[in-house]
Image (tube, rainbow, N blue to C red; front, top):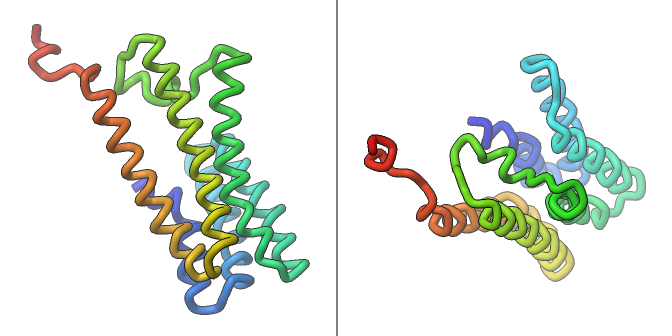
Length: 181
């Protein structure tokens, strides 16, 4: 359910684009992200940093799109967000010796430190790739194709990556038999 909630602004962007076009969709995405943050704040009393970053980016790039009536800005937003994620993962690991992926997944997985480092690096590389893929589609295909890719392409790529990551990590996952022993 959280996955769908996280996609709330993207889904509304997609639907609005199909009916009213890029500028209305951009305005709806800005409003939906504010609503999303409001809901999270109301329910949990705090908002994750990633959601705040997403809000800042949608407001900055979305506002530029609306004010200048130039869809180029909104097309850059996903790339910048993905590249910030990649940079955060790499900088946290290299400078602060903090592995955000391990922090998020340590309850589900116990891995040797070198494996955690590879997992972190693979997520950073994946986010860097997603940013580049977004720009490739945004500036080599129609806006319609880009909007479809933004929803379905990103979800498909994420699913493939997560499955491949799961397969890679499966040898480290304890089975019920291991837990009983």
